[in-house]
Image 1 (cartoon, rainbow, N blue to C red):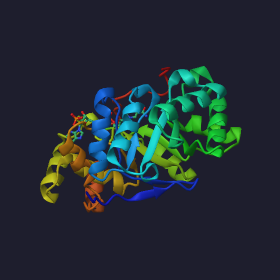
Image 2: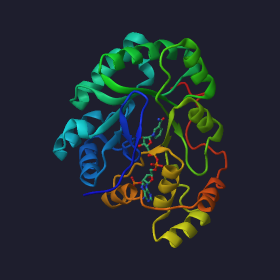
Image 3: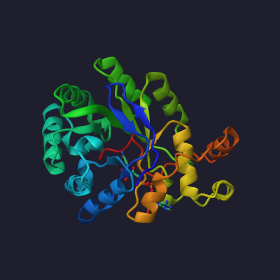
Image 4: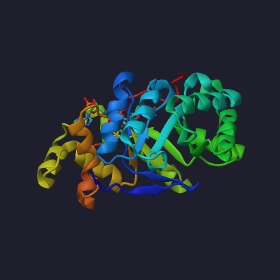
Length: 276
Ligand code: NDP
């Protein structure tokens, strides 16, 4: 199926499709089927993690789709118990084995775990892994401005991506501005607010006006604001619906109406206190 999905260039040269599918909480036994369904619907970007325990299913789904490995952008993330230089390298070897691939497209530090004080050494390993061709791009997730500052002061490359919780009810404007100023791509996790923000009247109105669903309106808003998203669904209809949004034209007033839904309310853990 042909769907129109724009890509964003990453500083290291990789090209990241702006819409993908996330597989957090997709049961390992269902993952291959979900991934194949998404790829058949035109998706070319899969977001998994060592802690999701379904990397093997992601690899299987890609092989089942018949697509060439280089046609799919695969992200995985370092498990919280694998921080540190040598552990980070060994952990990626494990991911590559489970995925059945020679490289990933993007390797992220899943959480900064600031209390443990290890992410600078971890990041040195990420730099080496990219230079060795084991990952095409490197980035972080759930990093705060002060964590990003520490990476910058430490030297070495800046993350190409920071994957953060971001949806209409929690928009993280200050952090997004930091990303813009430093050339870091913002990936929005839980882009639909885990489905819990979709009942807002503003979204129902816009959905009616554009003849689309509230979920599609939210995803189109993310795209127009320059973010990368990978909504999770295990349902084929929703998987297709979520990929089919790039043609939705929201004007500035409509975008601003969704901006106005920000409640500063997290659904997930706070990186300042979360220790894994
Ligand atoms: P999402 O915002 O993607 O919401 C997923 C929920 O919305 C599911 O319950 C899904 O149900 C439902 N849903 C999906 N599509 C639709 C639709 N079109 N209409 C109505 N409901 C819909 O939340 P997630 O927390 O799953 O986040 C997405 C991805 O972000 C994860 O899979 C993961 O890859 C990443 N993530 C990263 C984190 C990090 O720390 N880096 C933390 C959390 C997530 P159903 O499946 O039944 O269709």
